[in-house]
Amino acid sequence: MMRNLFSLNKIYIFSEKTLTFIKSVFPVLLILGLTFALVLSPPDYLQGDVVRIMYVHVPSAWIALGTFSTLTVLSIINFIFKIKILEIVNLCIAPIGLLFTCLAIITGSIWAEPTWGTWWAWDARLTSMIVLMFFYVMIIYSQKHIKPKNRSLMFTSIISIIGAINIPIIKYSVEWWNTLHQPASIKITGETSIHSSMLMPLMLMLLILLLYSALIFLMKYKTEIIKVKRSGVKRL
Image 1 (cartoon, rainbow, N blue to C red):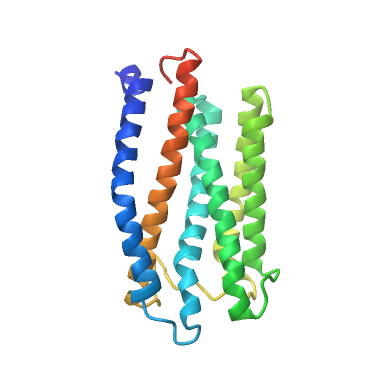
Image 2 (cartoon, helix red, strand yellow):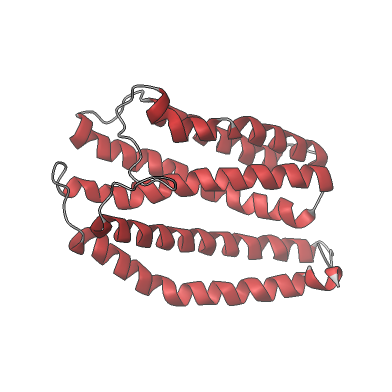
């Protein structure tokens, strides 16, 4: 039963169907999201239209943190149980995390110039995001260049665990230190201070960027499955 579930053909077919679905809905959602973010959502009473950078910056940061947390958990599980499919998943999601980390840093710098008066400051959150970027780079380097595979898994797991310490630092840096960043406007526990007219476009852009992440992941995942099939492995 398990062999049948994890057969390469079934995984490939499922990936293909999911990829086709995402491609069909993504353009419509993208147009809808950009319309709300750039046109229909109101300007901020202090920042004006500059606040629209938030609709890319904030979801990018969330995805960067979520991806690293996922990568850490999967790396530990894979190091213990040596599950081939998790190795492929980690190989595919690490570049996505790096992409959105860089996007969060770049859009944050663009947002900083008109609001802080400078493109860059060694703010606690900006600095910790730079640290996150370097952890992503080290993980990708370990996956690609460290041999044999067992040693690569060990290094990836160690880097992920150490890097995971940085996740709460990024999250709570605005509360632990005096920083230029404002406190979080959206809270899971507690009152959300952002108005619904901005919250809805923000959540929509988060969905769009998550779908884009899934699109990249599935395309990369299909490529890796093809490589495995060519190597003669019948199942993962």
